[in-house]
Length: 324
View (cartoon, rainbow, N blue to C red):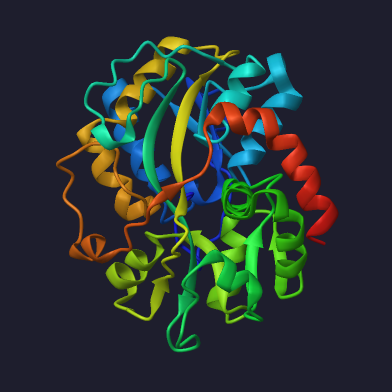
């Protein structure tokens, strides 16, 4: 999620003055002051006696786009922040390599068996609103799109939430998706490059709804003691996001990269991620604040990674031609 809510902190790149032992490409909110990156970095470096460096871009799709351009010139040993909708696309372009990690300890409901990618958190794309501003929230995606409520969402070409909305619209509307995008465009405030910018604008009051996650309200309750931010539950169901990490095909230190991926699904790392990245853990027996029990529990809809890999380019073309 995916994500973190340090909206007052500056988002910068975590870099090292010398060549790190392990370089991880991720998204900017993951490595900001209040995100999980700094804690995970300190914990992993203590265990491996090595130097880890994060390099951040705007959002998850941007990680893939950067690796596509750099190819064998990349610094990336690990890609962290892609999601399950991008796994097949990334694999088909031969940008990752098998991790060789046993995945027996993951939550059964994830049904995760993938030789190249490991999950580290998950959640459901949702439209978040302020109950002080929106008294009667939309109860379906169609109701939201047919309304005149102001909306901010993210670009599917650069952002995993934006891509999630693209899949959501396609799952609900099918062949009528173009008309849905046109209707949504009539009351869209802006489309941002990444999640952080969109959510910041929403908190400043620039829209009635913002595309985020079903876990987003937990942040406000735990860190701010604010209960007026909610995620709207839609009757058609919600598209899930499983955030993943993988070893770059061009990793200079693949064994250390494998060690880092194993660390991500360890109890130590999993205890950090939910209340720093504000997503759900991928293993059981992680202690969570009570508010997590009160989050909406959507029905999952959507497409398989192979279906997405086959249709993604045409769906993006459809969005570009109708959503602006």
